[in-house]
Image (cartoon, rainbow, N blue to C red; front, side):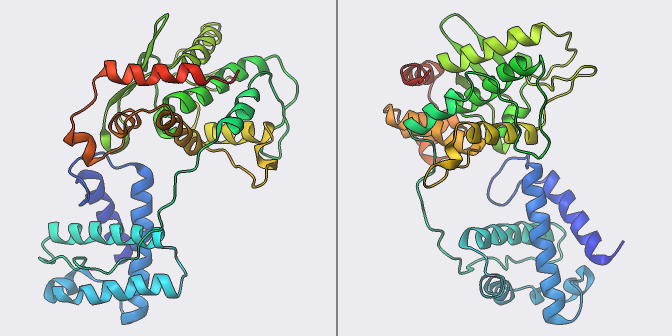
Length: 340
């Protein structure tokens, strides 16, 4: 194993077992870890190009101020001028460098923060993009009957499972659209994580972003779609805790995040949203933004919206966490905006 590979491996172990500098809780997502590892690998390659030697932990111990703010600023400038990275990507690299600095301090290789005072680009703020009411109606109508074509090159043949897959896929899409879970949260759901009653329901997110738990009331549209899927699910002898599973004969397994993403994209294409001007590419994140957009239009406060979405906002903590009854009233408002 090369010196660089060992540094990256040890850095990965540090990230997995320690809070990131930007927060105080454990539970880093795999996607975040991969991003940080990739960013630091670029930094280590840049270091070797600039200094004509590999980044070396022992060498840095002897002269810790070789790693200083000026060099990190030069690296970020190189990302902007040479690699033409956007402001948001450069900000992510800066976050990775802060975590790497924290790792080196934990090793006592350095005892200073070379990221302190870095000049960072300002990310252009834009409104989150979600589906408007007309686009949402088009998207929901796509689930009125099964379709056979896939986004991938492989074509489905007509089969008896199509209506059953429709029930499952509609439950996933309507859950994302009317309760706002992230795709990784939807993937991790088990049967015990939903409660459905005649006039209400609750979605339990056991491990959301930053390892936060939250309970989200389920509006009528999500409850009805989930109920239909549970009826279909009960027809199979599924020995699996996962709420959403593959519908293939034989051994059932948890439906992958990639399959959920492809299904949502396919539904958007089936609805013709990709043929609009400008075209709309539907993703689970777009559905989540649509959920927050509907709550905002319904007059739900920012504090309640943040709590229901699992966002970490300081303003939420200033005013206290909304009670379940308050969140239930907010979710009930969405019962009046169903388009089918």
